[in-house]
Amino acid sequence: TIKLAARVQAVKPSATLAITARAKELRAEGKDVIGLGAGEPDFDTPDHIKAAAIEAIQNGFTKYTAVDGTTELKRAIIDKFRRENGLDFGQDQILVSCGGKQSFFNLAQALLDPGDEVVIPAPFWVSYPDMALLAGGLPVLIHAGADQAFKITPAQLKGAINDKTRLVVINSPSNPTGMAYSRAELEALGEVLREHPRVVIATDDMYEHIRWSDEPFVNILNACPDLAPRTLVLNGVSKAYSMTGWRIGYAGGPAEIIKAMKKVQSQSTSNPTSISQVAAQAALEGPQDCIAIMLKSFKERHDLVVERLNQIPGIDCIPTDGTFYVFPKVQGLIDKLDGIKNDLELAEYLIEKAGVALVPGSAFGLAGHVRISIATSRENLEQALDRIAKAVA
Ligand code: PLP
Image 1 (cartoon, rainbow, N blue to C red):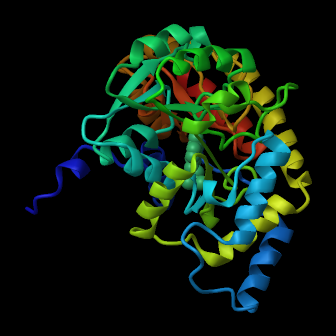
Image 2 (image 1 turned 180 degrees about the horizontal axis):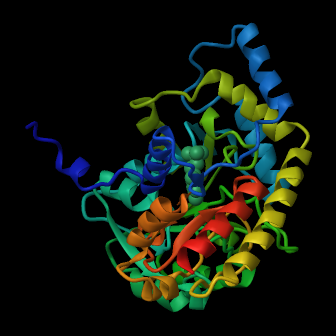
């Protein structure tokens, strides 16, 4: 056998991608499996975005670009930050990457030395801890259950930070919980962060636009502008414009950190795809009504799924603030079903017995829960809920 690097042995492949693969496998065997594992909108990329990309190909815009993205796309991102978030960045404060995933990867590589700690609220997006580990860092988890709406408290944050802490991650609205922090909650977290000037903050705003609260979107930088010299804002076009396959994410932040992240990217992937950059620019500069159409549909499905889940004895699902996930507590089901000891076994049981694929909460750092993606048709959702109700009755 070949000896692999310790840092690779320390990480797991993405659990969400594994569930999707398992569902595909069962379907290939002829089984009827409804997939509720998807981490992407079920809508097509809007036509005006596709058209911009086709034109880019026809115009021969098919070569290397600047590592950090074209000036035009970076300008569109700067305008977006100003228009939608009230944040001001210069060209040297923006880095365009191959998806939001690479933005965080670059940040971890640029920032972390062996043993540096990364504070991550749990439940978390599956990639944060593993990308911290790949960079030699140590994930430090703060547990936030349904009783606190899956949001960390200032006291918890205070307790998790020490001299080794380098980075704190905030993801709101959150994958997998769908919950978002209010301005007051972010101000309170900011107060703790203010006491630790060495700590860098990453706010992952990927689901900014998939939100149904009446309040305008806020991130920690809106709540605490004085944290700007050490805060990175991570965002992208993947979820808002249904562009997951195009691989465009971006970061805005202190020039010094952005420059270091760019250096990492220059020695790994170089620029994100030239064609996708043109498409992303069209998404940010073009009509925004495509977002409202998706949002309306996600909200209707959310309402349906939350209501139906709560009708199943043993399941508790709190309504979310946004995203296309719900994160019900299923401990009652686990306790009730013979031979099922945890959420991993429950997910296995549901895929085999009900033909419904969903992701166990343990993958996101919270056992006794599952993540259900509502990024599928209403018919699929209704049928999946019927099947779950029947399989656990
Ligand atoms: N951040 C969060 C919270 C996510 O859920 C995702 C995707 O699942 C990403 C970032 C990365 O998105 P992408 O790399 O597809 O742009």
